[in-house]
Length: 340
Picture 1: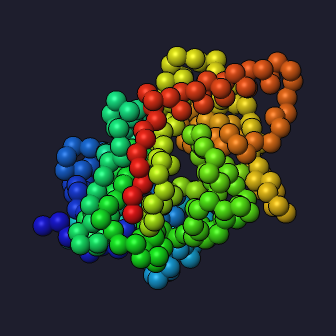
Picture 2 (picture 1 turned 180 degrees about the vertical axis):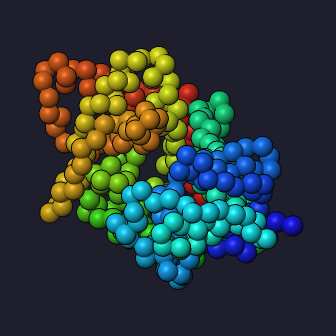
């Protein structure tokens, strides 16, 4: 019987039983494991010692390290290894005699053998979605299961719509806190998007807003934004949503030179209303260190003057125009009404 759920780990995550260790040995200054599905792991002794979860090495409440890396010998070696009756890997360290015990499910997942997460982005245009993926609250309540489905949609598609909710003003905050901490911005922690004469953004006016991302003026823009439609009495004013990654993907295939410019030329975005001046420079299309899509920053009505040579400016505007034309075209942009 696999009782690995009872074996401590360095974190508070639940690691469901996966594979059992069938053998463990020391070879070439590494700890070598064989798993019951035929896979093998070669574990570095320094990595194992650094991840010991005993009370001397890890605070049992905060789950943060007590052991300082500088106190681990660079040439640390395992004196012996064994698999105990509960299936845990036990390592006795040479010199100190300290014993580290490892949960096999945690080891399997963190040693590069666990399959990649099944959650992946599914890019879309209006051929795939004419309206957002929609979910319905049960008598105004959002169960954990429903929240999970909504968040999966956000992970897959970047968008989800939840209907049949009450108009309670506290709802959006309570809902957001079930997902994670709320980040405060210069607009406020939670704010109403309404038309007003003294607004500090075009979003507070009745002007048409082209496809855009919000608050690219910050080093790290918002990850998830939640809009709660409590009053929807005006005519018109449909919401427009575009999958920015889909636009970027198609530009890479159709206009590689524009894609190169969009991923390298930094635009400065700035909130310049009243006494405020928040700004940040970044490319329109942000990539991670593997060259994969990471983020889109595009707020056409809040750009500071572009800095660059005559030729660079020509190329930058041409590439941005290409992105904006696609992002605002019916092929990519869904249109739907908000309703309370």
